[in-house]
Image (cartoon, rainbow, N blue to C red; front, side):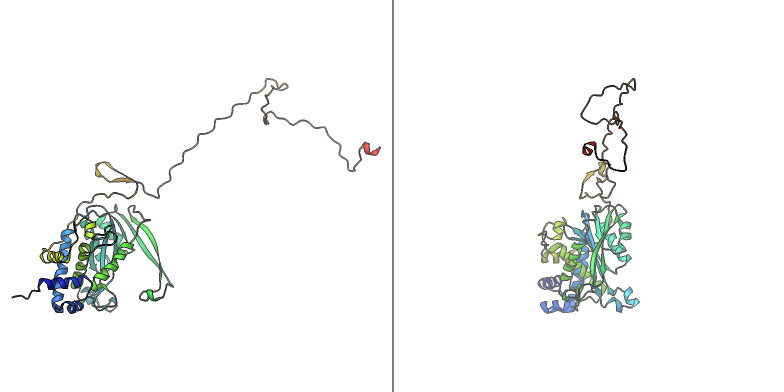
Length: 376
């Protein structure tokens, strides 16, 4: 007869794992052996991916922020041999796509920070959406090619690039990062995104939530993963619990409720029952994308063909031209030059009829002579 954990023990182990505890810490808290916890974590982690594939379909999320979270498996990348690198050891980045304003993690992918992982991540994101989104990412060079291949050039895609300068802070708050002072550069890659409002601040803040609830992703601790499969399972379990069970303070509901995926807050017993009973479900297939409603001034085109919107940065409208003044009336010419026609005085100087009066010549002298009155 198989040795099966009681339901109460399973619930305690699940609660410890989704709260960021390591397997050894969970062993001390629950009294369950570490190998049993290891097998249970792998099982519910794989089931969490299937549960997400079942629920995250036909989403209408129109604003997406994407980023990558660094972690490692077994050893740091500088100590990994080529054979170990091919086996998945070393650095393991978690690509996440966060929908705004719901904070729902639409999809994720764990792998190396390379073009292959970016293509798989964006392809899975495309398969879960039915509305053309506006995407904002960091400056990772593999994103433009992956997004262009999956969404086409009609997607609104912009990048927020962090630039670093030397000579940053060296206080206690920046002890574990190189001294640098970043500043942001925004650029448009595809379409016409609202580049002034483009940001990755929300998904970067969500990275801290991931590290808090997934113990294998924390820095400077001994809870790191030793196997790539277990690491992917831990990330899937943590993000599924975040979407369904964690209440976001800004929205006061769970991300899945804000995104319309579910109608209530999932408790741990309900999550555990779903993880133990969900069948293996593959990722969805891509469906046609409907145009999204723009944020600014727009007008819907007939037949559902999209929107006609005002794009900043176009040609300035031509100012109206004032009408030209009428030409001046011709001046009447007198019949005889000797007898000019009388001109009615208007109190103003008539430049056309005015002539200077002749002056009598005056003899100038080199010496001054007093007037005759003074001589007498």
